[in-house]
Length: 453
Image (cartoon, rainbow, N blue to C red):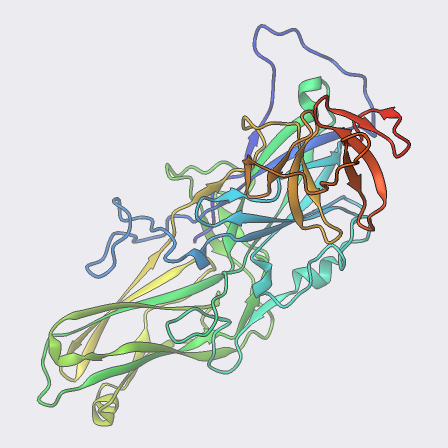
């Protein structure tokens, strides 16, 4: 029902007036693959704006409610047909701008193969070690283990609680995988290609509005909402998910959306009850409508019967009178925001259920943009970005702002020559550098080519 935007193939080519630049066939030819990633959501059914919840102007999409519903980290693992890990790279995003902080999402890959590309977003929320130290490049990808990673509920607690009483906040996990064909290049233009992939939130969430139309004789407060019948676990990665239109075809929706028509759950996913706190207590005699989001995130779910909705009050008699009632919901795929409008009418209540998707955001890396290709990212031994180095000018730049020059981090001046001393992590001299001429020297002060080119 709610999958995401299209897999778009962008082919780089020369202009109509350029002569074709044919290259020699080579089975071992490598190409540079640039990725664009879309955090996308799709239009669902009956997505008109409700009386309680405001979406976008057309009533179809809404933006993420908090930064924790955005992409903070992304791991890209590229696997060759024989199961070999070709790349395992971890990148970070600025959640405010959607810009990549520490990478450009370019990968040198062997051509003439169909790659399986895994996207793992905000992986810290998942109980599995995807790091390159655990899944190193050149190793065999642990397909069965990774594709069976689940997100679970323990008792009545949710996998992620970003609510007002929570002491910690967690970025919502996201995931996807694609089989992407990388053709052998026939022209020089084919040596640098790009693909646009999408990634989806792996969980669902609920929001509520409550309105009382018949004031009670005694002041009464709503103290909680609970739903039973929700799944106790679901897969982190989409499992046997069927999209309409299919995943490998362009979307026919003018908003770029597609539906999830079916998906697989773990064999014994079980069901659980989730309690949604109401803060502050809601005075039912106020005559006002309360709209609130508990910021609790749950596994995608399939019903094994009826979902049951129950309201709790500080007046136990009222809780018993109203009791619980079936909730008109069936399957709830990942990436879905379920909004429930509750209207109290004395000793009964009406419930309106609405499915609302999020607005898509294109997180565009440096590939294809006008950036200085001479900037080289410098990492520490743990793969963390330290700063950028311009291999032409010899200058260094801030890791979070490539326009902001910083002092040479290897600064140390040789008193005899005035050259900058460049050392390794142990303090040993590697090179000397003359900032006035841009010339490098070896440790014996003999001129050498730029060692960073």
